[in-house]
Image 1 (tube, helix red, strand yellow):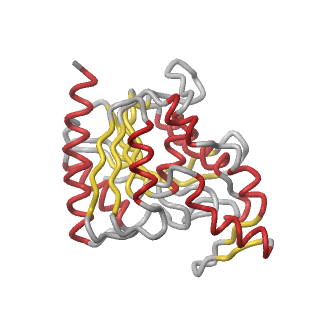
Image 2 (image 1 turned 45 degrees about the vertical axis):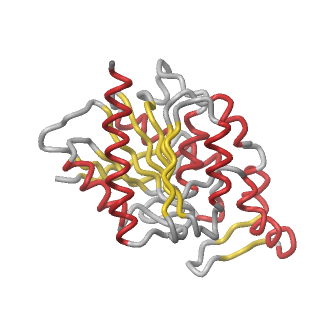
Image 3 (image 1 turned 30 degrees about the vertical axis):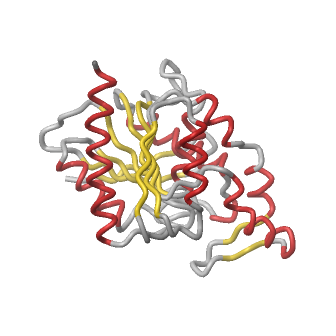
Length: 252
């Protein structure tokens, strides 16, 4: 039975996470799902967690601050705050190890949160063994258009009502994806639509060539940033096949 958890971050924000325990665990590695920029933990994330449970994994989905059921205003969030949120979730559950699965900006958060991750540190709780990204935001250039709007107008508000201002980009520019490709030490899987007009496939191709770790890249023909139901089903099959191979190899 899924259970809701309230988590307080080091900087005082309150997050809401949902833990999905399996009836018969098949792995010590927990899967933590990180939602996209103006998304939340509902919908496809609940379905992915149910699939994870069927595969024998503990699964966690949560809302970053300013999203869903978590506290805070979206306009105040940054990549730095998202990293704080993710690490608070990992620390709270304190699992033996984790695989992070991020969609879009959730993947970027997972990557940057993992660089420099210290498995022996008490404040991060656990060890990241693998990262998977669906339609992953990697290089900052994918946000160039949004940055331009904010520079001209002072802020930008999505149709969903989520607003971004200059504070977001002042923080964003502190994080170069080249630091991730240089320092990451865990296997990576990327799943990207060939027709993605939000984050171009070229970014995942460049990232794949730049990583110094084992990388799996699966390209979905004619799929955009949001996957069709058919592509979502293929993504889940590919994700869990990759996890099974990767986690088994890591344990050998």
